[in-house]
Image (cartoon, rainbow, N blue to C red; front, side, top):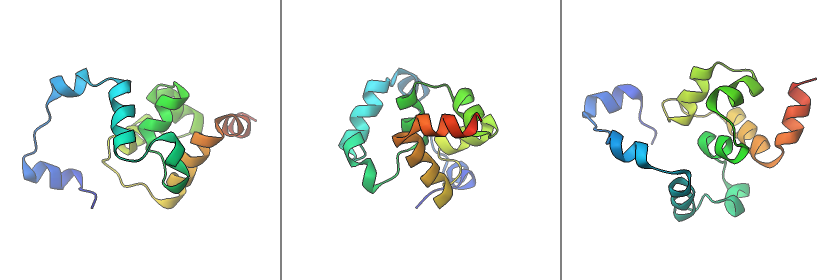
Amino acid sequence: MVKTLADIRRSGGHVDRKRLAATTDEDIIRQAKEDGTDEEQVSGVYPTPATVRRALGMTQKAIADLIGIPLTTWQNWEQGRVALDPAIRTLLKILWKEPDAVRRVVTT
């Protein structure tokens, strides 16, 4: 179940900002593998926005610009504030597996 921002606010959740800031890309990749979402298994599930962006070596702004969406939309997807609909999950798979094809299509 995906929690809404209102649900999180009501629960009084706490974010350990120091721990979050100290998390490296290597930590994220390791955690993804532990969760079963590593690159070899992506065909059965969709990659997360953060996984795709990091794999492409792009900033949030650069990837948002590439696919023609507002930066805040990408940030909301990446931070889990907005549930991803099937079209977005498909776009993420295409970006993950065929980033050059996406670049060719959106830049012409």
